[in-house]
Length: 160
Image 1 (cartoon, rainbow, N blue to C red):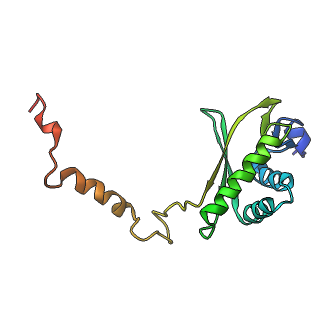
Image 2 (cartoon, rainbow, N blue to C red):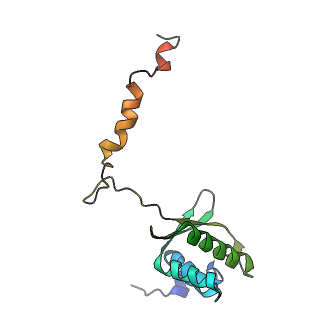
């Protein structure tokens, strides 16, 4: 079985994240590392570095729209002011660089950065979010469909 090296599998320059070659599975880590490197040394940038180092960064490619999305998932104790600082420094970095944020085969790509603290409720599994079992999620919808006082317009059609 042949041994494949990075350069043999991924041609150099195929994926570039903030000017640095990357492989698909490492895009989020490369983006996070480069954003930390490109941040300045002022007070806002130091806060940016602290928050981003502690946050989870993930990446999603929408193949339909060809948009690249970077999610910065911050902890719940981050204040709205700190989130605004995070957004300001991110925008400043991305506006001031001389190279594309995302480049594929030397073509500049569309991208977006989403800063969030959203926690996906767990519907199945051992650590279910209280009140979020699959039945509980749909109960209000089902009750709303046949609840008293709600007229079902389908029964007044020409076929009944």
